[in-house]
Length: 531
Image (cartoon, rainbow, N blue to C red; front, side, top):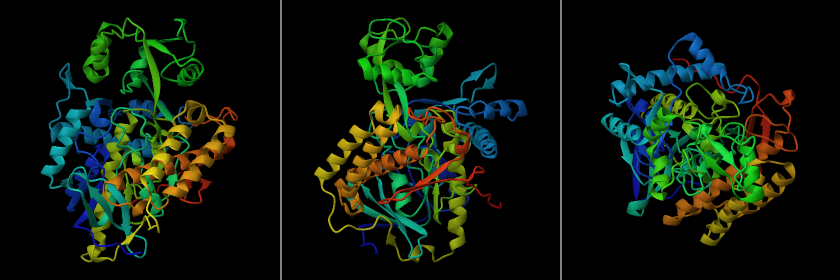
């Protein structure tokens, strides 16, 4: 069905949805390739999202063969041996280049030790502030507080733009474009993790509505450790911690790496796990405070010394923000399986470099800047190949239209189901088929009420589409989890605790009303693009 006119009608060669690191690098690269670029952010580009909220490590490794080999091998077993060495090598090369450009061109103030800049991490607020300034100097137009609502295609199904809503102006908009990059982030299901409430899986829903496939959705049950009185999930700090039961006895097996299931089990049984970061020496403590000052703010306000005193911790769901599942990548420039549509960052699958396990920072940060760079380049190339008539194509709404729009009551009921079926540890983290199947049935039931979410208008449209995206995300991830009848990467099954060599493959999932899942060939999906 053709779309109706909208109050604000815009054009661009390339439109980027999302203003985090992946979106900023995509916009920068597309603009440098000569494209007219428009970037749309749900919040304010430069301050919105998990990266802008804190410090993050970066998978920055010098081009030394031994160091690169060690870096690629370090997480292969954790990821269930589903990563692709060629892609990992590409990411290491691109990250090395981009971090050096960040220093040379964006003047990022990396700390200097012994006369050498240390580039294995960034302070998120400073990083994103400089990225915003950098892309504006490159000529990128930015619309802040302008969430996307759906993709638009031409009659042949090629993505040709998108539709959205400008919050501060109470105004709908439409963008005609030669290509679209989805860098909308992962899905943390409104768990309250710092910076993640904008990450509701919107891009994956829009891609699926246009016919795109997803991959690795079973690897989407990441939970970060956080103080019970804070939203900061700086999980790496808990490598220096000791964890205790409520009675003060040591909680054996609990930890940041390989021991979060023990924490989840104790929280389910008693509701209390205590922690003390007592294995960091004075130098490490100082580095922690410098690297992530907002981690310590709630402690300081409460008068708690986390290095000497015990404090309660919890696990916050971070879904595909720290998981690896997302939109399936079809070539070296991060094209999806739909012409004219590209994906980058947490919105895209990270299986290519991480397999079935990742975490915060490091590989995620490297993937964001690398995939963003490739997606921006690919989108600019695709748009340029369309010629002068690209923005005169007839537009069709990919989200479809419903006879009856979704009401606020149905939306809130759907969010309740997400909280009840996705947040709990015993359903999503400590997975078992007997719990996954009823949870999926509940989610299937509410999906039917949200199917017409693209018909929403005005301020309610954003919240309604977010609810639909979270339900869709949960259905895809539970469908993948049920299909993987083994324990691999972060997709652990209590009813199938062993690794099954016969399932050494990625899983592709898709569909909206009727979901499907199938194995992907072990060699992976990507095809090279001629330069």
